[in-house]
Image (spheres, rainbow, N blue to C red):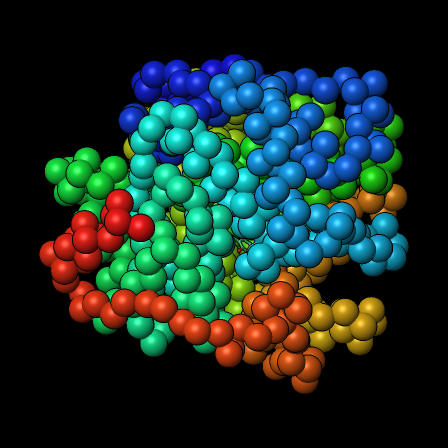
Length: 465
Ligand SMILES: *Cc1c(COP(=O)(O)O)cnc(C)c1O
């Protein structure tokens, strides 16, 4: 199994190299050269598997022999033992053929843990085997930083530096990062905005001597291994609801298109999926694409579901690669034009092909709030704003009333307490493992917004932990 770039110019790589590389050298994203296939008999045999066994079965073909199977099984078991629910991703029956799959039972209460808990272990394994170390530097406006920190803490071959704007993230978000006191975790509060933090990270990556000196790396959402780990729960849901005999639907609250693309990958591997609904908030570039073949960049507006406040969905390029018959030159041409003009143009026939299985729906903050309230009154369940967007989109767009539809619940309600309280009058409680979060000791370093100070700080901490 090798991986090729969506832009066709970068060398094909094996799994371990793709894991550490992230973005391809030609600016493209890595995808498998061919999709592993599971037959009807294979799928039937998987029905009784535990989550970890299913995860190993689905992901092993992607490793192409680069990681010993026993080691991989151990990493998978450890990663999913960190989840609060025995089912890892439990399903809730909402009635009328509507289901909710809860992906937020990991350590930081958002679906990113499903992939990152495994990714941290994979990074460490490959680096230790090579006798290398990396320095991961990232910026966060609050949400993804904690998932990356939890994934990397105590990993011997990794140092992680997470920059966040001082005084501009919520207390829960800040404490989910700063109360992790492992010696390889370095929380850096910057006197500035989130954009300042992002600019500092970019500047570190653009400073090539510095980049080489500390072996900079990232665990961002275009990393193939993150997609790979997310494919598993689509199979899980399908098998629970009658696959392979029955076809089902998925509705996914979408930002960078990584989560829903993993569902599409499951479909290409033999899971029969009749419909995918892309659920967006006011930042609706994907909605405009699927609705009328008009993908045009606009300004990002802040919403109640901030993890979807994105204009350019990087993983969409992986779907585009398929729609354009896996022709890297065509993808490269389309993406260059998109970058230069802010507009993606694809032929009507290609767009129609995308519509065979994909629909999209846009839900604004007013409706999001109404849905949180309605679900609480009708089911007695508190849901977060991202999940609310999906639930509404699933109801509006389900193509056929006999199709079992699974909406993905991507965050725990306690991660977005203000929106939930505002809608229902109830303050969602943190789960037990975080209930003393506000009393725990914090550790962070406050730095002014200056590149040289940051670089000096990183140099002084790397390798000394
Ligand atoms: C990251 C995130 C999303 C968006 O997922 P993508 O893979 O970027 O489409 C949705 N909901 C929550 C809570 C998230 O953290």
